[in-house]
Image (cartoon, rainbow, N blue to C red):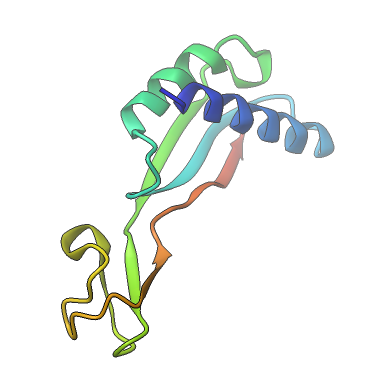
Length: 114
């Protein structure tokens, strides 16, 4: 379970931003998590609750997870498609010349202060 390590990095980044902006308490952190990022949202939120409540700045802070759809681009025909449904082979032309456009993100989208 690498989600706890990710939570520690999120907390570090949020604390840095809060300090730079003289924020005393953070009410919510919104994350974009790609559907093929290997991060399990339920594990992330469980780890968040445990770790965030140990910090005065984040005590009671909500973690909202927005799942970003995985989309792949085909170099053969130029079309995009849903990665999870079709994998690496383009469903339009059967080319294997594809690359992931979105869906691997693990990023802080928003920090809401109170």
